[in-house]
Amino acid sequence: MSDIEFHNVAKTTSLDEDEAVQVLVNGQEIAIYNLDGTYYATDDICTHAYASLADGYIEGTNIECPLHGGCFDIKTGKATTAPCTVDLKTYEVKIEGEDILVGIPSD
Image (cartoon, rainbow, N blue to C red):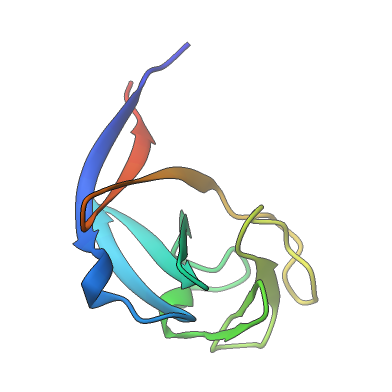
């Protein structure tokens, strides 16, 4: 069983509500989302084709891929509309003061 290592990736003050941003953690592209003051993290790259979901469109709790319009549930990573069929990985998020920390499994 792997442990989770938390990485400081952004400030809460740098991410407006209903906004997403791409961050790199150990070379891994992660999208951080602010949904009404609650922060979530998923893989940033769409599972259908190479596109950054941080460049997509937030609609409710879904992120729409900017390339082909497929959607994922931000909270669960579940692919919700075609052409996306493979779910995204999600990551635990902690807030410490103004710091956003993302938990990445350590090997």
